[in-house]
Structures are given as structure tokens and as C-alpha cells.
Length: 180
Image 1 (cartoon, rainbow, N blue to C red):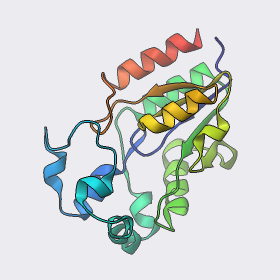
Image 2 (image 1 turned 90 degrees about the vertical axis):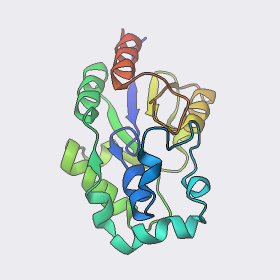
Image 3 (image 1 turned 180 degrees about the vertical axis):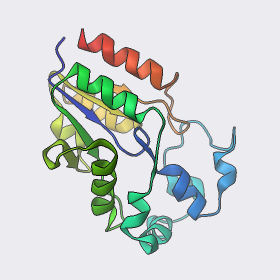
Image 4 (image 1 turned 30 degrees about the vertical axis):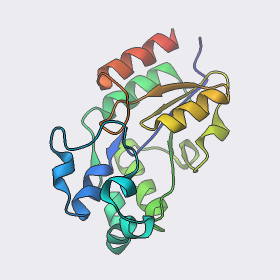
């Protein structure tokens, strides 16, 4: 099957958002092995805070918080292979309750991946871009489920907060198989 478009999630796939948010709330214990309950995606639930309380320390840091997110070591490899599998590769990310997340995420993406504005999409409704030949690689099981329900292909990127298994290498292998 030819892959018409490949969409890569930023937070949790290309960069670490969870670590800095958890550290901003002084809950580094959650990052230790076994500290994060498998399948718990909601930071609000895990930290026992409201959405406003979750994002306030991030809002206080402004766009710089987003601009300085740590890039996962596999991100460059994932983008490289995605570009080999499709001429149309875009970063697809969701906005947050932090008003400056859009500007900061855009700066981060431009800095690390030289992505042009037309290859960057921010929307809370990722499924709107789904369709035949469109692949989403995301760490959210809900996003993958909605994407598939709209006729797209989805690969769950394994993280401690979802039920995915394997490593980034397995995701790249699946990507290459889908592109054949």
C-alpha cells in the first residue's frame, strides 16, 4: 500500500513533554521505573490536579518551555524513515491549555526538523486529516482509534502511559512494512 501522507505526533513521539510537566510539579518519582501506572494517559488524574493547575507552571514559563523540550534520541531516525516512505510528512500535534504552546511548539519543530509551515498542523481533532493512505504515528490510543475509525492507518507509539509494546525500532519496522 502506498502511503499518501504520514503524520507524526510531536509530544510523546518526537519530544518529551511528560517529563518536564511532571518535573514542574515536583513528581519525579513518576518517571522512575514502575512509577507510572501502565495505560494512565491523563496527567491531571495522575498528578491529582485540575487542568488549570496542571498547566499553570508551564504557562508561567511561556513559549520557552515548549522551545526547549528534549528531543527523543529516536526522533531523527523516525523522521528520516517517514520521509523515505512518503513525500508528504507532517508534524501533527494538539494544542494545550497553555496559550503559548502553539508558538513554542512551532519554534521547536522548525529548529529540530526544518519543517515548513505547510507541514505542521495543530488541531485537537487529528482524525479530520485521516483517510486512505494516511498514516498517523501517535502515543495516544484514543487518537489512533479515532484515526482508524475515519479510514486512516495508525501506529501506536509505545510509551509508559499507553498499552503499546516494543520500541521505536518496532514502529520504524511497521512503517517500512506499510510503505511496501
